[in-house]
Length: 261
Image 1 (cartoon, helix red, strand yellow):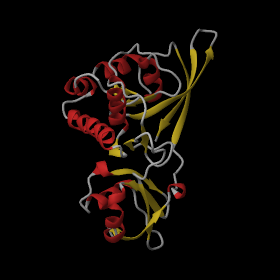
Image 2 (spheres, rainbow, N blue to C red):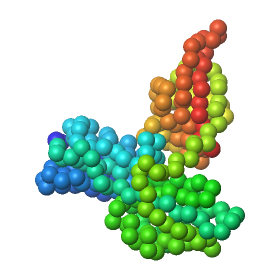
Image 3 (tube, rainbow, N blue to C red):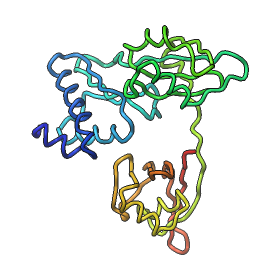
């Protein structure tokens, strides 16, 4: 393994990322030293990408997983496992049912009510909102606190119960499907198509560091993009290149983009 300070410096995107990445390596070392599972905080997609780069650079290619409770989870917890462990118990799942007919709560309402309980965002995974309830993923140590204290969000009363991973109600992702053709599968061309921009404007955003490819900043307009890649443009949203097709008679490539709404 390279020097720990050098590894962290190379993987960090911003100076404030270094503390988070240091904690990731601390958890790895804890797992190795004590031969027990060790879990970091919940990571955003950007933080997860940095952690993956850090682990690769450190030569750590196995013995860990990212788990958010379901395959498409946005926020995931990095969990290191010793050789003897093939399962873990580092996530908890709760359901908050809304009281009263017509009660409606948004993701922001629910997150605000959780923050009011003194809980930091890094200890919470995804908040999955359904018409009459919301499911949350969190750390097991907070289960009793939420069961006892999370009784309402604003004026809406809540009944909170513990559920299993299998009972999570995951809403279908809301996407707008865009079918287009591009001169090439360059980042500037696909970004322009996804967000309704001119290719020149897309290149400006990329050069300014406002575009992330697979949650990592990319300032290269000619960076190749392949099916499955996620493009995030600051202030414009997030999109995924779902499919690429064949060439048209004019030599352009057909693409299908899913823009998250």
